[in-house]
Image: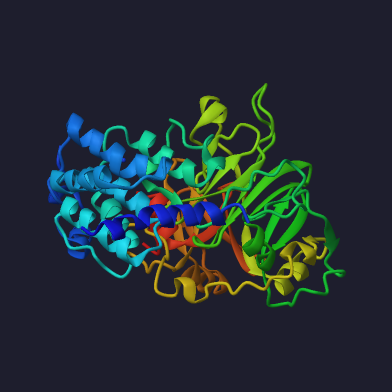
Amino acid sequence: MANHALRLILSTLLGLLFLLPTLGAAQDSSLPDYVVEEFGAPPPIPDGPLSPELESAIQTAFVDSVVDSRWGDPQEAALETVSASGDPRIAWIVSDLLRFIQSREFNGILSGVASDLLGKDLNTRNPWGDITDHLIAWDVPAPPGYLDVKRQIFTTIVPGWDRLFVEGDVDWRLVSWGGVLIDDRIYDATDEPCNCIPAADNPSVSSASEATWLSDDDIVFGVEVNGAYRAYPRQIMEVREMVNDTLGGRDLGIPYCTLCGAAQAFFTDNMPAGIQRPILRTSGLLSRSNKVMYDLNTYSVFDTFLGTALTGPLAQAGIQLEQATVITTDWGTWKEAHPETTVLLERYALGRKPDFRNTRDANGPIFPVGDVDPRLSVHEDVIGAITASGQPIAFQRSQALLALRDGKEITFENVRLELDAGGIRAVGADGSDIGSHEAFWFAWSQFYPETALWPM
C-alpha cells in the first residue's frame, strides 16, 4: 500500500472537521431466498472474542488514526493485520469509516479491506453503500467492543453526538451519518439558524383562507386532535423534518422522514410523573434510511418509526409514544373537507422549494437498507397501522383508494380503512383513531418485518 494514499485518511477527516462548524456463523438457510439471490451466501462468521493482536490493530488503524489524527507505519501494519484476519464482523467498522471518507483512492483501499473480510469483491462505485447493504442483508454481527470504537469515530467527527452514542436498545450497526449535523438548539429557539435540519417549535399558523401561498394540489399532512385540524405542508416538512406543536389541547412531536415518505404524529404529553415532555429533534443520524430522533431534554434516542425510546432516562422509564393519524392529501381537498383547519405559515419553508421524490432516490433508497421485502416495490406507498392483537398491517395505498372510492369495505382484524379528505385513515372497530400513517413499503416492511399486506 502506498503511504501517501493511506495518509489521505488524515487529510480527509481533517477536512471534514474543518467543514463541520461553518450488531455462530451465518447460515444460508437462515436467510430468505431472495436475500441469497441478490447478495449471495454470507461468509463464515466467528462468534468468539477478538484476539489481543486484532483488538490492538483495530485501535491503531481505526481509532487512533481518527481521534489523534495520526497515520504512519503502525497504522499501515495494523490495517494489514485487520485485512488478514478475515473476520467479517470488523467490516462494520470499515463501513463506518467509509461513510466519512471522500477520497476515491482511500475508498478503494478500505473497500479492499472490506472485500478481504467479507470474501467478496465489493470495490464498486458506491463502496460504503454496497458493503453496508451486504452487512445488513446478511445480518453480520458486530465485533466485540463495537459501540466504543464507533463512538470514538463518530464523536470525533461531530462532538455533539457524544450524549447519543451510549448503551441501550439501539442496533448501533445500522446507525450511520445522514450528512447533516445534530439540531441541539434549545427549546423554542428554532428561529435561530443552524447548520442542521432545523426543527420548528410552536409554529405560528394561519386560517385556510389566509394561506394564499399554497396551491390546491400542494401536498399536506393533515392531523386532527379533539376536533382541531391542522395542515403541515410538505414543502415545509421537507425543510424542517420535525415540529413540536400543540393541537386540540395535546402536545405533539411530528417527525417527517423524507427518505421513508413518512410523516408521523406522536403525542408527547401525559408522561409519567417526573418525566418532562419530550422535545423531539433531528440527530443527523440515520438507521436504515430512517431519521434518528432524540429528546432534547434527556438526549434519549428514539426509534423514529416506532416511537420507542431506546436509550437514556426515557428508555429506562419505558416511554412508548402514542401516535395520532396523519392524512397525506392535497391542500385543496383538505381545506374543503375541513374548512376550519389551520396551517403553518409560509415562512417556515425558509424560502426553499424542495423537489419531493427527485432524482436523489429515483432508483431506490440512497442510503443502505440491506434487503427489502419483495412483495411490493421499495417506494410503493402504503398505509400502515397496528391491530388490537399487535399485528402490523400495511395497505397498498393505490389499491385501497380505488376500492374505497368504489364503495368497497377494507378491513383487517379490527382495523377498517376510511376516506378522509382525499387521503386514508385507519380506525378501530368502534371508529376510534388508531394512529395510522403513510410510508414507503421499504420503510414499513423493515421496521415491521412481520407485517401483513393488503390486498392479501
